[in-house]
Amino acid sequence: MQPLIHLQHGPLNLNALITTPQDAESGALLTFVGVVRNQNLGKPVVALDYDCAPELARQALNSIAEDALVQWEINTLILAHAYGRIEIGQPSVYIAVGTPKRAAAYEASRFLIETIKQRVPIWKCEVYANGQEAWLEGTPLPEALAKTIGETA
Amino acid sequence: MPSLTFTLYGMTQATYGSRTLILELPENTTVREAQIRLLELIPLDGQAIALATRTQVLKPDDVLPLHEDLAVLPPVCGG
Picture 1 (cartoon, each protein chain N blue to C red):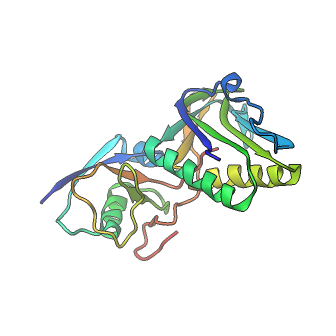
Picture 2: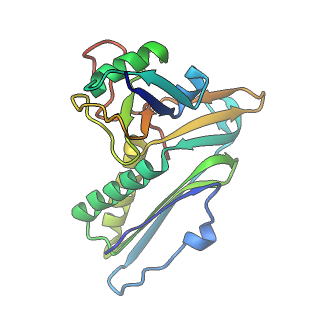
């Protein structure tokens, strides 16, 4: 099957993404929606500003989808990620997985969101109520190098 | 010496104060050598960076391509 990869500036339109399996073989369609919450570590957050390297991000999402298709029998697969400023309660991530049995859908969905966080070149900047901003720490890509010579991530 | 333009993403942009960084580097500079030079200019407090073209993340032993759009990628945190 061909996964649907969607990357867009601004919040996701869930009505356009929510789907039902087009095949007769899926008994489970599991969807995950990541939304912007109003606090982090006790600090009031008013929005997330996502930065993104779009072409690299699309490639990473495709690669992650291919990895999932190898591991599970998936009949429907949608990965969508937003970038730009996303307000509280607005969706920034959408994952849909259709599989014959629910266990595989749960496993694949968990794999997909965790791997997106580790491999897709997207970055989150929290915007706080007091006007300050902070980039969140993340996971270095395998090719990354830190300041100390010879120290790789 | 060739002049290369790097697009900075995430915290590298905020730390350097600009979306782009122009650096003169000799031909046959490796990605690792460029990473070290860039980390001298972008004080990231121990955060690691990767370099990429528009379509490919580069390995440290690769020779830096001189005629590509280049990107500086700090640790990722999508989702």
